[in-house]
Length: 428
Image (cartoon, rainbow, N blue to C red; front, side):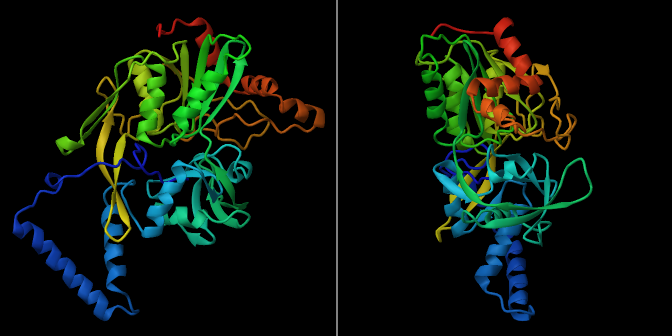
């Protein structure tokens, strides 16, 4: 559950908007609708049953105007505008979920690993019906974020329904400090590194490079890597570009095209010779969105990696965050992004090279089944073992990877492919 700031393909891309972007229309087109709006506002001010200020009416009109455009455009109050900056660095108080409006319903895209939401059993695809007893039917995404976030130690009550069920259930989740750690890594077998990206914040590329730099310690040579983007909802555009650049020596990574020419931009790999050149397999699913799709699309189009898993979410739109004079702002969809081969994935998604549904091999059968639109949350956390000895063993990184391989058929296939299937590499 994050609202992103700075350069972001999932929620925010700060662009310089020139006057040409807002070219004037003929006066009769501009002022006739404004006259009607003024009439309605006067009627509400004079006759509505309760007192209401003009500022409240204007803010409400802006909210409604942007909501009618698409699920990602919205109005940000002063507090909401400030809060957007939290999610790209540092930490925040909340329960640890990524949410979005899907078909008018507040939907969980993914719980963040090892957070209160994850531990409470909230799953990708869950629909949030109520927050503290208040219906989410007419609630905006930013309002939902405001209500779910809060100080550490204070609980929030949610009413949800699983995607495959009809009976709602309530859960009380105690908020905690949610650290924004975006990269986790572990050796899956000698010479082969597993790298899990949970989001794209301002530290992601640095954390990824550090994980790669740390691996050769002990004389080991990297023979291949598995990049896990499952249930990664996206984040900052520049980080998606830089992460792709870590694996690509040259070539286009992504292009952005909007209504106006000044909004068009092409991002390419730097080719500085410091990239990871070993074979690469990427894991994706329906929870892989936006920035994740940029990375997956670039690596696929350049035949740099094999993609394993399921079709991605399909969010290919770019949002511009525009600050307003009073400290508030708007988040406006201004462009679409395209893969190096010129494909827009908006509402389409990225197809894997190997379509492999996630199989539920655990005894806990309340997890999402393989045919759901939203996939099972990432399985990197250790198993809950009944016996203390087994639990102690699960704390060992090697044992955790053994456990994960045993229950994650997508990861198991990725390991076999990165070891034995011809994958494009290069000499840095």
